[in-house]
Length: 277
Image (cartoon, rainbow, N blue to C red; front, side, top):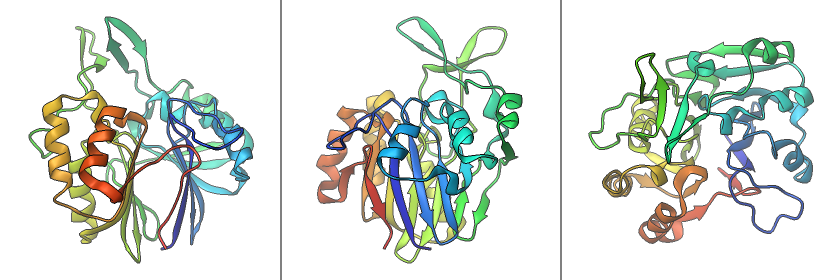
């Protein structure tokens, strides 16, 4: 499959007059089987940025959501308003309540709209927990097995069990895996399942070891330094042509990765275009 990916929402924008940055993530995908959208950002930038980049959201054949957090789902209502009725692919925990506790402040970070509101706007939900092929060569990972000993996740992201808060394992975390002529093209949401777990799962499911590109949020900016270092060390063992980080990677972790990967590294900001061929 040939692929063109355009970053519509991300934390930074560079040299794109009129485009907006926000804490969020969204990718517009042009494929042999039509156009798709992966995540929708917070909702503050996606419509504006699509207009700036002359992207017609009404052409999308489906919307894939990496997980339930607001910075990946908040633009869904606005996208549906522009695109009309659309198939929306997500994990069944899309509507769960979850929170962030940082500096003793509890903040709701789940999807900001109810299922009924989104369905009334045209969302046709398709839920999966296992690997799911959307079109030939383009798949959602489903729940990624947590096998590494060091990828422990972000302890500040929690759910309320009724007896108090406990760490949210975010089992709904999914990535996109596209099989191209040049190898696997992996698009992360936030990599809450652990970037190494995700890559291993993609390789195991597809049988392909070569990764032509991996882009998206790695969430290495919010985990322990031990996890960060071990993840970067493990990343270097894979056959990766290009790695473009963004969103929740954090500037410090991004700089470390830039040092380790050299010319293979790039920032994946608003307006960045990555092609598989």
